[in-house]
Image (cartoon, rainbow, N blue to C red; front, side):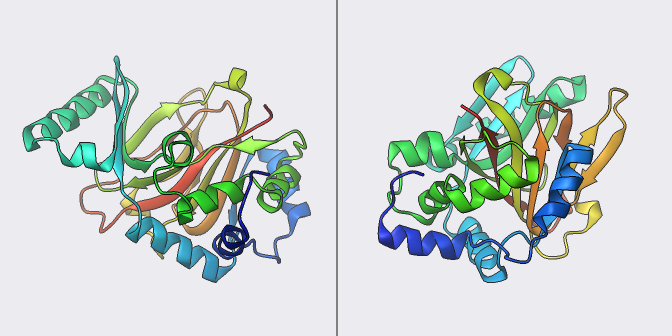
Length: 254
């Protein structure tokens, strides 16, 4: 486990307190059968509510996007906020054009919890740092190890994401196995009673492009899936009344 102060430990146990009623044996059997699972009510209710509030009210959202041959790019909240409206429009148009061509493309709001924020000391001892530390601490790691039957998992990275209207993530397969990625995760903290028409689904695709499984954005749900496997996050339409909050990343064996 990463170093921690007593105060951060107390807060993190509140923010990432696991539901003690989880049937880990049944969850393991489902993951073994399908290679994927969505665990509902994964956290204690009060922890999940507080964590969603942090994402909604205390997170400086930047932007990440990719437009085909235009390699993935990301800006902090301040950097994106400083762009002229015409430049924001240009970025949006380039992403839509790439998707229209069938190229790999995405657009969503993000806060890089590990690579920039945690290691760069953006907001020391912030709730985001605390949650990241405890994703990498024994209780949460042990849950994932038990459900996936992969005892070699030793750490995870993390980013907070927000899929607002017009955001999406094209089909891809996370084929970075050389980096030690074994299991991808999405800790979903979506608004209550997210409607299917509002999009933002985590969909899994077969070789013919058919959806073989789809997970609705839910409040307090943890999706886990082996990598690589084809998946995408479906388009959130303009009429959606809000966005899809989550913390995402990969559990690694090295």
